[in-house]
Image 1 (cartoon, helix red, strand yellow):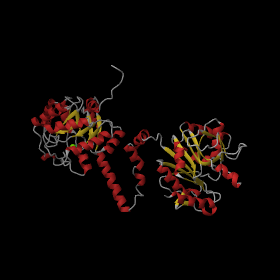
Image 2 (cartoon, helix red, strand yellow):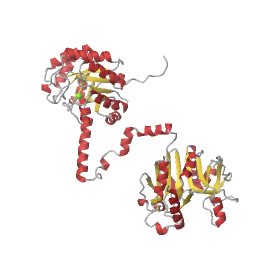
Image 3 (cartoon, protein in one colour):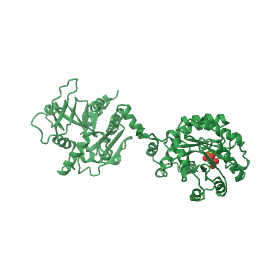
Image 4 (cartoon, helix red, strand yellow):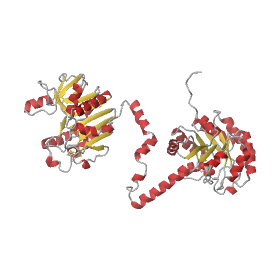
Length: 550
Ligand code: SPV
Ligand code: MG
């Protein structure tokens, strides 16, 4: 024997529920979603109810859904869950041979057991004209049970024989005779069903049964009976057989009526599950993880757009909106950025708003607000997006316009902290006499070779700048991932301690990182981008965007 513990099969777990020495409970589900909800609620098993399955299909509980349609639905339920499922197999959808085939198929789809009832195909729900329902011949039903037991491959697969004698108006004695025969034929448990509002007949049945094999009940009509009564009667398993579908019908009817009458969903929004809850129940997280594993993008990238500024040189056009919402070539700047990100498969985007935050309205963007934007810097704005950081983050100014390859180059670069530096801009400041914004000093100038150089940033910004010529301009675009995140957190702490955090920009953060020994890698580009700082830039951005359109 080795120590590897084999996972306990679902069939085994259903058997354990039936054979445990306490009262256990399972609850109805009718599709993958409801099955998952039942499991999450804590139930150790699920009843795949014939009534609920057929109702969910919109047909009657009279074998109108074919057995393969039921099989397919229960397979979705098994896929969506880990707990055992007991299928309500009606009469077994035919004779002994049909049941054999059913058992084989259920086992192959991960269903733990089947319950068959001693009525005739096509069956009728037990609560509809029960007295008029014909019961199966006892010998024929016993043959069916034996055939099912012989067909199962897994010795733990359970066949529950359901006695409908009380439903059809027969005596407790008749029910007992039938149950004994079914038990002798190999049934793993007996479901004794009744439509009476009181538990009395089942109590008499249970007393006489005397624990020959596990007893299962469906307290739909005698629902007011205290659960302890079932316990003292020695019942093994109680099935809450139709309460999920009934609950959802009530909720859907109420909601549909209200939405119809109000011609609006505004009133119900807060009372229904958010779409994110549906995604969660569908297991969307697992798909995101799998995408990461199998499509090469290791970690989903999160983009933070710093969009709090009104724009100092743009007052005349930013009365009603922040700079990031200015239209370039018909599209707000922020919208252009979002489009570029989405093209690269980056869908998790946070914009940090400040000035006229209320006007930031771009689909696909999470907006967080830096209310104190007038008195704080970009670093504080970045701090407002902290809760949404992922393992891999792109941070950029909201007034950037760039060709797609600029982002591609950044995404392809290695390094935990990477900045994009335009080496062409090194000449700009020198030629026109302007002060170069965000000048960047690097470990080596851009050699413009086709082969990536490993260059690091040594300083950015005019403050405390080295006495040499900068190698270019940091364009306001960077990436921080993996261990780089922790380095950034440490640098932020340093800036908080020395009191410069609130006013600091991203260059101060980068310089603090460098001072602390962190490696900041550089991706050199040569032009093909601009930022919008005044009306001239705005015009230039319009032309640039024009050139952008194929
Ligand atoms: C079902 O849930 O489909 C059942 C139980 O068979 S009952 O509806 O009570 O007959
Ligand atoms: Mg049923």
